[in-house]
Length: 112
Length: 113
Image (cartoon, rainbow over all chains, first blue to last red; front, side):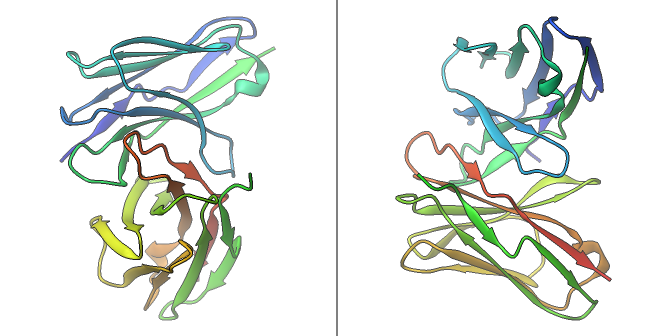
């Protein structure tokens, strides 16, 4: 059973702090990885994608990928209350087109 | 560019009925994937369509089916509804290129009574 595991949380950080979200995956064939944000009652919204080992930065968000350790992370700098949501890590299924494996999500609360 | 649209947004059905959900992908996207999201199981893959063909299917019973039309719009059908089918049904579209980035629609909230 191919899986994506996330630190279950919930995670609570003060406004302005760095929030760190982590994820591991089991399918060594996965090449593409994604972070989605899901507000309560809404659908997942793509934040970042990452395909190569190392860091990828987009504004306040930095995704990190280590394929040898099968580890993906997301850092949110200068966290804002509007960042409060559930963050879903997803890995492309290496052998199955059109399929993403999702973690159960980490609920993040940023308090003012 | 318009995003992924799904209709209807909310549905209430009773056990034993059937339901059809619709998804229109982002213009130019040819792949449509369907997922079921429940509090207990998270996001589970149902199936994926590309160029009117089902390429992959998840671990769901045969009561769950789908199809894709020539304009890439997709429908999924659930027959003989069970209480456990209550969920948020999400479709996601992608170019189906190398990176396969999927963009989600707003979802259809199905409640089975």
